Length: 273
Image (cartoon, rainbow, N blue to C red; front, side, top):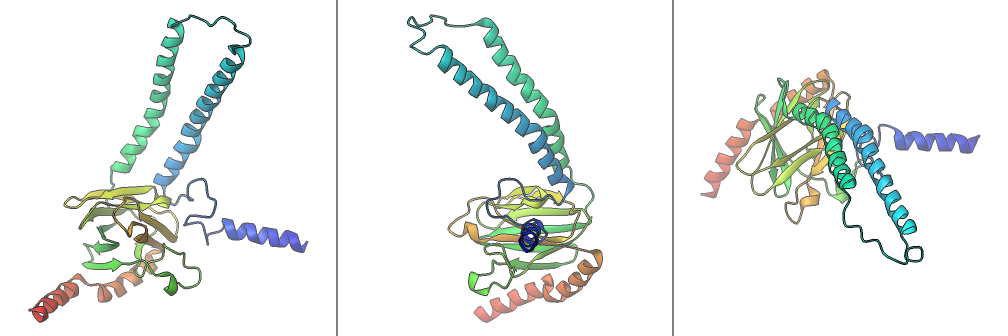
């Protein structure tokens, strides 16, 4: 009985919310979806792409084995001189076209849904730097930089290479619009649990959105090779209740006010002169 309880507790640990929002060891599939957009991506992958891929792979394997056995040299002393077969050529042209058409319809619907941004409840600007992220909440006039926490400074239950000093906070069940750009080279802002990934291009603003349907801490990383510390600019987003978000926002307006940051920059320039 004791061993059974231990096994159950381990299963709960590895399937519970503690590790649900970040990559797991030996993970093969997607992270648990936390938005309708990611749920649609998972559905399209699991119920459209995988069956088609599996069927094609099995069929091609069958053909290879069939040809190797039926047309082996020991059974066919005289090689066939067949150069083409009209029926086969028509079939291997039409069938892939039909498969692509079947996949295209839900694919285009999903792409359209991702690119059509509904009216935003919260707008965030993410700026990629070498090698960290900067964030601004334009409507609230706050901004801050987000650096990865070094291994030596990690606390209990903080994942390595994913924990940052200043985390992004957003309210649950609200449309979050993210404007993404870069200050130096190409970066990419990616959050797997939300199905979000957009390139950060210097001099250009790309837009994306998500609507988290549950609270929790969600992790992502820069997904565009941007230099020697590309692997060390993670993304951490806390999805909280409206009350918790309002409380954080009140504190953030005191700690991360953009006007204060501009004032500090001006003072630093004067002292430097």
